[in-house]
Length: 200
Image (cartoon, rainbow, N blue to C red):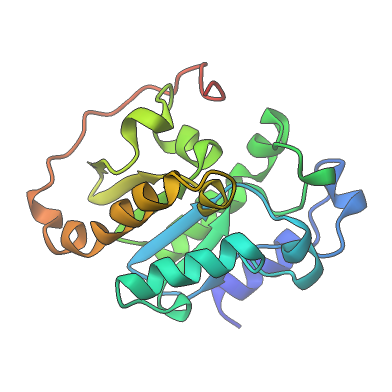
């Protein structure tokens, strides 16, 4: 059994917060264990909770189209969420839920060791770009410890706000060239974790 499969089994046993009581299935993540690009969303929705897989609802179908636009398939990348269980009624994840789940995400990043982490939405962004606003930093990349961090709007945002569709598609198109030019992206100065992490 791979280290990632073992991690999935551990995540499935997690009962650190209330969400575990209400989940149908835990949604650890999926994709290539040696993926160069890792996409991190916010939290599972209804479809994900039913299937135990990330991004399988309408936003997931759109993410698949976005991947196709840069000649990638879902199996070639790795897709996870900040939290692994669906919040009731698809509400926003709470800070305690995010911190409870953080260790799982950190272990996934460690095992996959991606060259690039793409944050999808503001909760995922807040973990890697503390104190920043998504409207200001989407489509921009930072390199820390040889990993490129790249902020994007969540694909679901385009489903609710048609005007964001072009923005998201334009941001997605930049990914291959950022990967190709990784060595030219300057290393960012280490940022202290700020207390404003969950502000928008």
